[in-house]
Image (cartoon, rainbow, N blue to C red):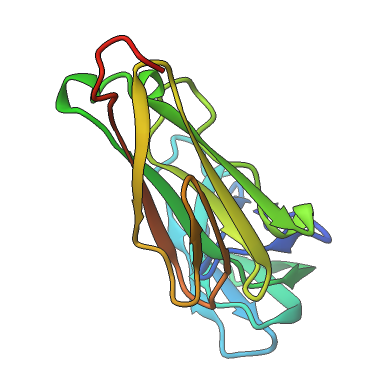
Length: 203
């Protein structure tokens, strides 16, 4: 038996290398699982631990090409019998945009107290939602298509002011608490600095 969990049928991936994973097995025992991308020579997947020979997890990493990709996964039992699954998926390269906040040390555990960061892209589908979404998460990351417009907005909370940006890519336009740039074909890490308002208790 062979079940391919990732990538799912028709999936659009933005991660490279791409993790291929699933479950394979046979009553008489599993010999190996081989993975081939776009008719390239197959590579052996890593088999995970299992108490049942019919349920053995496997995983392998492949590097997809831009556009359509065809993945072939074949499981072999100890007698040489095999089962094959072929799956097509689309790869669109995105890059990581990581947003961090520089804040007073006393607020390390509660960065939301100092201020928040918002991300907007044009078109909106060019950037994934910032994750993790939990309160006080820092840093947060989005997967962004290169060549697309990105707008970052830093909003200070009461008692704090926005100070400056750091880590902006080349060509970025700094307009105070708003930073705009075109996403390059590379990962970007931007930090927004928040400081306490010089007049205690002021907004």
